[in-house]
Image (cartoon, rainbow, N blue to C red; front, side, top):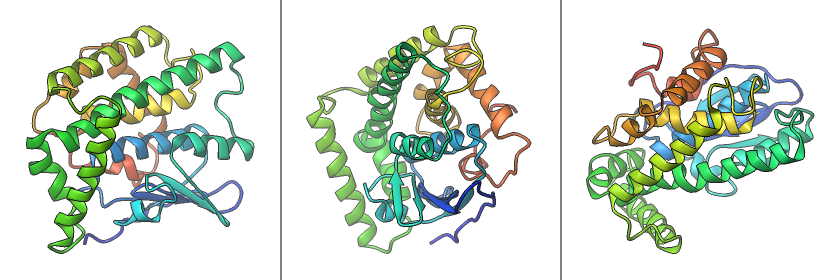
Length: 280
């Protein structure tokens, strides 16, 4: 098992914990051993939460944990732990932080808030599902990337057992939502349609709702940046995003404003260290 990586930041109120395959103490953020273990979808979700916390100007401390998935109350990463409260995934974390007096969307009217939520649903239903499909339903990716990475912290035969158990769970979910019978080409087309809708909404604005970022910007950045900087079997997925220049410029903008020049021990961005920055 790889040693834990610790990242330093400080809190505004009490210490909290964010566990992704990351974890955070208000804000400690724990996540999987990035180089060998973390998968595309987990990295995207963890980066989205980290971007959100950065946008709220809430310093965080990030620590790698190989078993963060099993520490989370929902079985999903990321999560935060504050006192006796544990909150997992972006939506509930946004609500938790809002209750503590920090919100990115208070300036929106009700119509804009409804629109923001609709686009967040689109990202979760299309991009997140496509990432899960690719890493658990595409046979070549499963054998060459997913199984080795997911099982890397565990000895044989536990590594294989846990990998196949997770694959069975994800494929059962894909069947339930009607994605099990899709081909990779159809999934990539869904990703393209999602990117087209996001590109149309963003237009020439710096953020989706003009000059200030919201949780939608954090969510979109987390997924698009991860897709653009993760090396997979082929570049077909990242090429779909690269077709939209305003989306790649959007990712560069957030990387520059909220991660470049900050402490480089930021967990999710550090996860890209063996890949490529959008700024290079």
